[in-house]
Image (tube, rainbow, N blue to C red; front, side, top):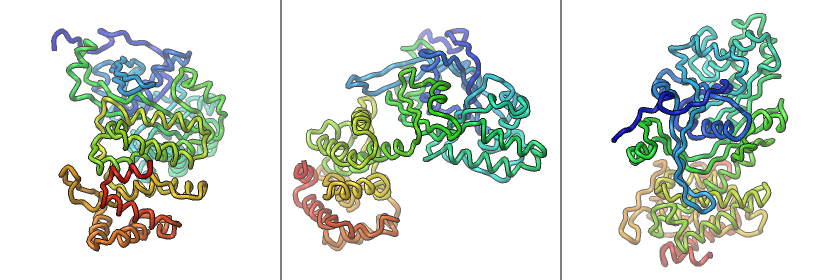
Length: 495
């Protein structure tokens, strides 16, 4: 480790900009996604804003961040327009990092800074929760929405309910309609603390409703985090001892649903990420994009994994580049699942192509077995809705998806692969027991009918899938073919 400088504003340039964003969360995802996006906006537009990080729980990383003056590098890896990319960029948009448990005064003072306009968070899925044991007088409240209400009230008081001093709140937690849940929690705290708010209760409630803007968002970027294996090489390359390097894929997408009380144009104006050429969409609703992601990213993953694995292919990238499995993935993605969505076809094809580039990442060895954990529930949420819509729209079953289901059923039989590798399925014990008992009959029709009838265990509101015309027969014929000819030969029959 010769001649490495420690990373700080003494040894590296750091821009100074007005603090415009409060960010709850200091983890890898926010630093490689949101802070990278803001860094790009500062460089390419007149946004001119920095981020104050607030640690959402008592123990966190703010001391590490402050120890490097909040400077760190992002290492982006993947394919972009067919080319392999492996870049390193120094991010300097975080001005400082606070622990509200030991610096509550500094945390609450953020409410008094006139330039603050945005609140962004990623406090894990459990972070957006209402806890009725939180008190208004806690310093700070233990929950994230509780802290936010304390901050909002301080701001309301400081600026006498000024309509221009409300905040634009953009949660990034991985919950569908995260903003709707967060707004609901905020409203519950305002009710819970009604007595503490006293005479201000009605005016504060109205100010929050009218002049604060809570957006639901969808975030998409795979962030492996700290690059343990390559850190020595990376530090040599950058010439700094950076202990907060964060690695991420090059693909990024942020869909921000406009709040009910603000127009798309105004939000684009205030948060000019699209102007910076970033893949940030400000939309009427995040729902179709959520559906697109589940269908075109998670959907193909769920069926390609058992099909690839039973064909002797272990890595997602190798499956994409396989002469037979690659065609199978393309068929499921473009000819089947894509036909079931309601966004413009051009947009869907672009997203589908991006997904295949992501699957084909030269820097990530994504094991198909890691995707196959709980395959049945995944098929139920990610692929079954598409199967039904496809049948409705085209009048026939999508063979690729049905073959994927037959591959999952075969995988759950256990035993050995053609190359002798042990097949070890992993799911809820009741599902494993059901499959074991069905396969013990030695009758593929009984297996197919038994799995498709398991509405309480697997299919939920979809009911008994034996009722779907032609499905049972097609699953049986694929199961027979896999037993007789093997997986790969069976795949060839549908291409």
